[in-house]
Length: 389
Image 1 (cartoon, rainbow, N blue to C red):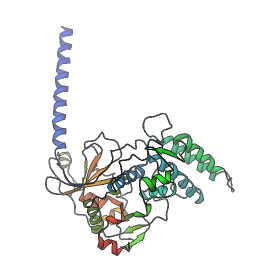
Image 2: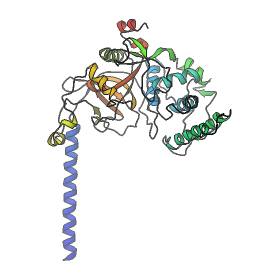
Image 3: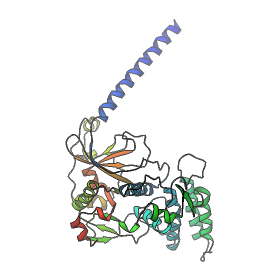
Image 4: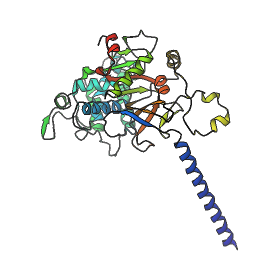
């Protein structure tokens, strides 16, 4: 009797679990069908990569952009080394941090121009030539390395009133231990290259071709400005400041003419979801919704805010729009109601709904974009003239 009773309870438990699982699957399927996207314009690009446990989205997104540039110009698909760029950028971050006596940003973050500047200085190499994987793991993990590097710099600053000429040697040695020594010459497809000759002769990349743009009213429009975000650690890099409508038009013009875009913006919002595969700006804020509204399933495209220049500026000034993440915009899509979204390549691997891609709504782009990078020839002619380019 005891065993039969326990068996009955066990069967009931299994039935409840199976029923719950089926319900959960139906609910997930219903949620996932809220948006149906049709891509109208898209550019050539390389496969999605995974930055894993690193703060190097700035490098992954911009390297992805450079790989697309090579394809756009008729070159071969090539997998370039992010860590080669990261390795060199750390040296310059360290010099900046020490020269400013620690009153500067030192961390894993960065901006698109950091990639372009390192390529201009040191060239670039393929991924198989320099993987940056020296820690005995299959994926990148920079937490320990970043902590050790910061400790070295802070120790140097606390060491006395006069620095020795060897602190950079110690810093570089740690980078070599974690990432590996950088190559000076290598073979690729039967030819010998230096990193610089590979960038100029094989990839045919000209660093002067690439510009960054932003859109904020505390700087004059159609002028260059310094963008005040913590990861812009170089200080001297200038962004072209344009009105918001122009920023949107620049991106659309680029994508419609075969150019891609590096996107720098805020992904900390509740409405940004890699799991759902899209990012939106609902007309009604989460805080203003009732409990019933918050629990209501999304079954179709949501009405969104119309984003003005003034509202965009307000969220930047009050820190509700922050510089969180960089990705690679590779296309324009429309939902089933004809609303525009930007097809965007992320760097977190392919285990997401759209295999590593996310769709940014027009409203999300207008509100949450901090800056972009493009090829200067992707500018509409009238804007190019206003910028004296």
